[in-house]
Image 1 (cartoon, helix red, strand yellow):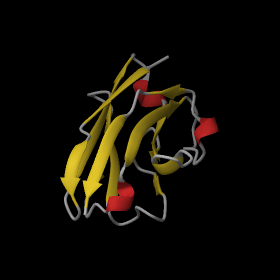
Image 2 (spheres, rainbow, N blue to C red):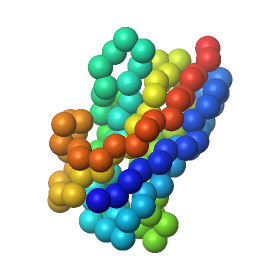
Image 3 (cartoon, rainbow, N blue to C red):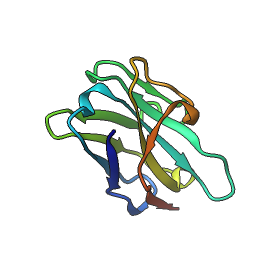
Length: 124
């Protein structure tokens, strides 16, 4: 089973960009679909993006489509979330998650392994 550590969060002005990274331990990273989720204060955790084993198939929440890009480098055991044109409503704790399955899920209960989260704050 992999272990996940996120990094790259911080404070950014609206319209700015951040790139989150999620480093995974374990030799079977390439066999996990990966997802990013976020939880804003007082809200439920919500799906942001997901990516298949190979990186060919990606999925996005409507709220981030066209602004965020998920990618992975299996040689580095890392998944990324490039976030552009950030908005104050993107402010949240961001979590990466892993699931040893074939099709990326869009629901948090479908993922087995979670990182500790990284905070993203977008100021207006």
